[in-house]
Length: 329
Length: 127
Image 1 (tube, rainbow over the protein chains, first blue to last red):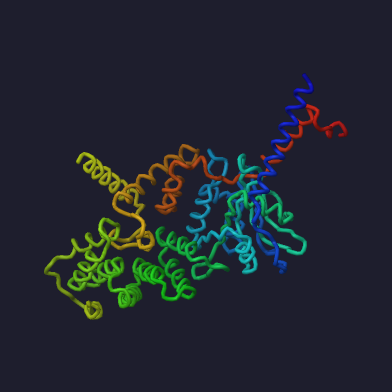
Image 2 (cartoon, rainbow over the protein chains, first blue to last red):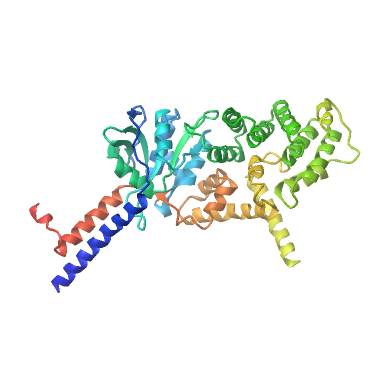
């Protein structure tokens, strides 16, 4: 009987070791510290010892504190902790950061992007998987430093104010967690290694949740890195529009339309703006062009049709409507 | 035919419930947001908009089912974008939900204890 049980134990041990070995193969080409030499430690980063399962609220309070916002993990728990899951979802951390006026930027899944943020003075909220890929144990921590010569990474984690971890071990846990890392950008601030799709996604979320002033500043910053980018230009004008900054919005739409006269969304939005400014006739002309230019069946076509429907055919202009008319090709 | 009428009814219901909840973020429904322009290549049509509204209700219900206070759940839903809601809907329980390190330490202890009990290792006798 006993040897059999002992055999089972050995088998179990081998399974566990086998799991590790299999992971090493997946991790090849994994992030590493090679080629870096600057030691960074963001020692000013506050620390909130984690209570029970609430590493999400604690880690979020840590990065918020580093960004200058006083945050109480207990208050954050109401926003990001889900009792039935025994933890916090990544997207809810993103949403809570956004609700506090930040542009929540999810870094590229590379060690370079993570360490570049540290060098720029921003701690990174990371998701770690402390167990196996097939049997995960998720944990949020905040990377506050790195010492490449000693191959160590420094974290605020759980109940540890300053957890030093061998870099390889940390990077494996980060790799198993899907290499997810979040930094909080002030609107107008850019990531250390800006990735266009990631940054645009973050800013579009800021706009969608109604933070138009922040979105406008973030789009403006995007134009410094990607000058003339049509999405950033449209985003800037739209955010200003929704924020009630009509002059800036109008100039933005008109400049974009001067280069792309068939930009259906810009035509539609400018039509809405002009209608609001009392230029109903000019608005109608633009709305007709928007309907003609929008891809059939899409959201933009639907919005353009709605815009046009609200503008009577015998509409007249009142006020400064000239600029829009002049652009009619 | 029936399908279209059904969609129209659903759309109307959703529009009313959204209006009451005050959850529409866009100031004017006919102003196009930047996301729509970014997604232009994909299909972001009227059905997708109805779907987003349905996701909103579904995710809220799922949060409540997972022990979140209903008022907090509706605030949390309002902070998410349509895309995020679509991503979360029905997937709540499968997604990583970061918790803590205590659990892991417990597991290691249990594994060591099992190995000790079945005689593979021999560390606890020295204590």
